[in-house]
Length: 88
Image (cartoon, rainbow, N blue to C red; front, side, top):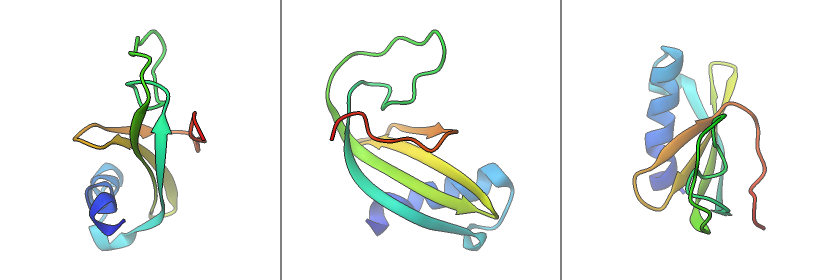
């Protein structure tokens, strides 16, 4: 889980303008998303409907909770809301 969480830890710190040591990984969960947008489509965005394995990473960055959805490759999406995986 540490390897999965590391880039999110740094990204959350950068996003909030804080030092990486001020960001804390709260949770890392393996999930299967129901689409290529990793369950984080923006209004008007189209996404391929395909089961996509990845992770849900929750980070506390200086009191702000950020939720990242990833696939098993390089795609990382920030979901502003606390979300639940689409597929159990």
